[in-house]
Image 1: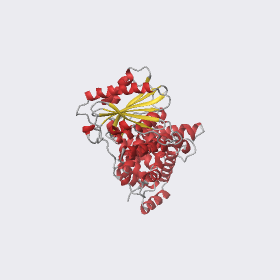
Image 2: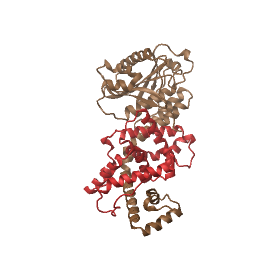
Image 3: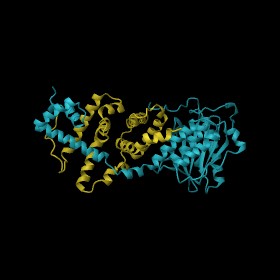
Image 4: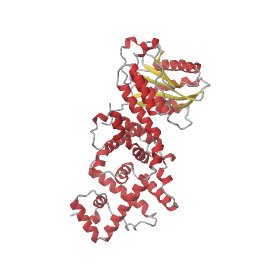
Length: 296
Length: 179
């Protein structure tokens, strides 16, 4: 028979309610007659209570408010994951993604989708990976708009973080209007985006680039334009997502509608086009994304 | 498709708790947010495989710890992410008396000084109230390991705190037990 006096795990189990009835009764009867163990059990129970109070006790309402942006990010990303994986036509994806945005950002976006893909670009748009649009949109919202970043990254740090996509930093290099807020790679459903969060004329703008090979299944590759071109603009009530593509890359510029001069956005698109071509030049078949699989 | 509301009811309700736990373990609010976001995305993707009525909370913790170890592996271990932002809400809101504040701080310091495996087990058992069996499943370790880690973690905490015990609690043991 185990002597509880020398068996801390048994006493721990007793205090945690982990012992079966028989073992618990045995310890209880020992504790009743052993002052040292009685004190020990009392101290263990007190510590347990105290830990729960200090490490678990919190201002529940305050915590809930503090976590609201994260909760919105989670819901947005979650729903967009569905939107992106549901397949179907582009036209089906756009309203769904928009609905998600509206649901997640209740009160911010209040209208339905008002725009549509222009007729001349819609044919090309059916060729691009629709899921990438939804992911780019989510990244813009989740980590461009809703998230704040610490200030003061150096260019070297930004380059390092962007890795394969470092050339997109060139989109801001020569501009006096664009201010780099943060550069990083965002993973989204196993696809990675090089992401620049920028300020342009007081608004948050995102530049995103991803490889088509990163999980994208592009139908009928023979019809993909070989040059880089703006292939579509997704029109939301308050933001636009312009898509560009080169043979192996997709690029996106997410901008709010209000207040931005189209000239500035066009210049940004031109620079992104150039940067994507530069990446194309560097991109070899050896580029691999990090494995990233579900826990299950 | 009723997946969304069901997921929110079963899983998203645990978000605050997961942020709290992740913040305690990483000591960084922003790291914790990233972890929790990824946890929920992974959970959402495999929600079809989740059996309604089973322990969703433990299932989320399992994913959280899995994501955490994935990220740690990827980052080549970066345990020293001590951030001021990690100051817990409890330190800000729950205590008024200086002695309590001091005690709270000592407990947090003692907890932070534990090795990561012990922190995880202690947090799950004594703060979040998981059973040994559940902890073993969440952390994918044998129950015996849970018990020994917990025992060591509690012993360390007691040792670290015994000299600072303020009045108001029954006097603790004199001398420590082996183990």
